[in-house]
Amino acid sequence: MIPTKAELLGFLAAEGNEYHYSRSHDRFFSDRGPAGKWYRINYRQNAIEFTNVEPVIQQRFYDLLVKVYGKQKSSFGSRYRIRIRRKHMVSDLLHHSRLGSLQWQVPSEVLKSKDEKVKAAWCRGYADGDGTARPYEVDFDSTNRSGLEQVQDLLQSLGISSKLRGPYLRGPYLDRFTLAIPKKNLPRYAELIGFNHPPRKHRLHEALKKTPVDREP
Image 1 (cartoon, rainbow, N blue to C red):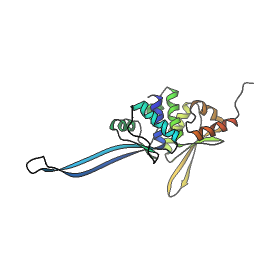
Image 2: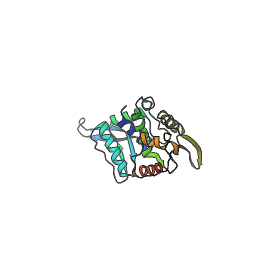
Image 3: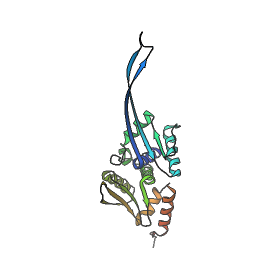
Image 4: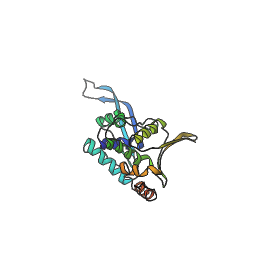
């Protein structure tokens, strides 16, 4: 696992979805036999979609795709999303983790990595997609408790402690959980992970101005 791919997978955990299509139709081939012949055509396609309204994040995601898989035909459209259809790309990405609000997880290759840059890159992608920077903490909201617990373990391995809160009832919607990194750990978070998302990057910078830093006596 390399950092660029880890960040790509973090983005998809936050705001990626997988789609599986299966359709069939009848088609007549006039050149098959003396009188032609009807055939049943079965069509299957798997796709991955990433959605984000922030232009900087759209460009970052696209650049990561190019770095990992080469030149792309797909691009972000007017609905702020990009759909990945190439079979080898979809298969490879879903090999690391299923996608969707209740299915995403931190890939085992990231959790077990000995490279802090790989772990930090996944966290950065996830934070740029699903994180919130506040004056007193950085937090992540999700309906996927087990996924957030894996993020908590990943952060802890980087020396960043966090607290899991919830569930918060949101009937008729699924309950949500919040993983919060307290203010005292924001300098470490900023040093290793940070944000590419411009407003969140700015808010984190402002929060750090008000965060006391330990100094040698």
